[in-house]
Length: 518
Image (cartoon, rainbow, N blue to C red):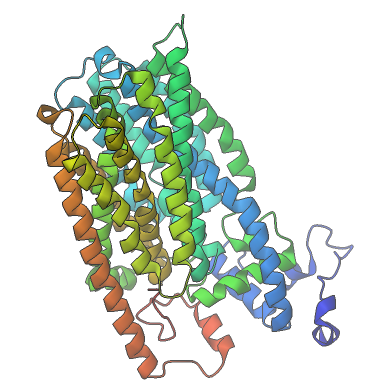
């Protein structure tokens, strides 16, 4: 080790010993450690990393980050794209006679749209308990098989009750994806990097919008089928989801400690990188004290309210985009095609605002600015005459930029809540509020107000204003708390002490070295 420290550029992991052909030196060092516990293993990996030259670790951390960016991010993007595509199939199939074939009337379609989020709401907190205790990559892989099959089952239903039940179970199954990816992102990337990476995987909502619209357009042209055109959409998307499950099961890591695409040394560097987050990796044990702290922390409730706001906005926009455009006087095929530019708006908005949010102290401000295009579009939908129907369609496209404030809002619990049980609790209840908003959103669209839905437009506009108000309060609170800690000079004598303390499962309130991302 002394020679390695003198020549950092020559640092290598010693070759595998003959007597232990399946274990490298690093794993031999960890022998006796419970390597099934990510936090214990992570602390051991960090202690080993601190023996190496810091400049060399910094250089190697860039290579590790690139590996994660080019291998893990695409897997997350594809999975989330399929997840959103599954949700959007209802929107696309609505243009091809879904309601008529299933004998829906009145508010039946709105309730079916909400059913998925009733299921997600039911599973929101239980999933976060499961995600804390079991490997994230394996959970997602197995879940892809199940929800792909359930998605295809939607082609077999023939009435409102059946559709409501299937959508409910689909939501319950898919409810693990968003919180799982928020947690996994916080385990693999630093707090400064997370907003952009999260923006990348959520930007695939835009890709889903484009692919889904084109899929619906192509399905609408298919003739002489044994099934209705709207059923074909569910069969194709479900089969794609099922097949992708094999890739995720084999390759998606559970954290930096067991990423297959990294060498043993690179896993150690990956742990060293995220140790600066002051959050450790993952802790299996549920701490009652951390649950209590989460429930008495006022900032928690501001996050919940912001989650509810983005849920209301998403529930309205995601499920009624085709109904709005169709109401402007377009046929089903043109309605499907006109939704594709909205996906491009979402991709550009998510990635563009994601880059801005990586700058120091700009996360909260970026969420506020990213809300403005949606507000502008809603004002246009309220004021532009229906004879200018392409201008109204453009206002609908602006609603897709909503993806950016949604995903940046999702990063807040991941970067600003420390303590594994506290974070799991906050994320679980946060997504429960988000789901409740998604349930309420579609019911703003009254059947008696077709095609302009003025009550819904005004309701969504008010929700945007509430989101901005809550975000201003939250960001201001975090700024004041950071300044209070800085004034008290709350820092360890050595950087190593701060890094290791992050693996003690302390909450953001208990860890005096923790600073909130603003």
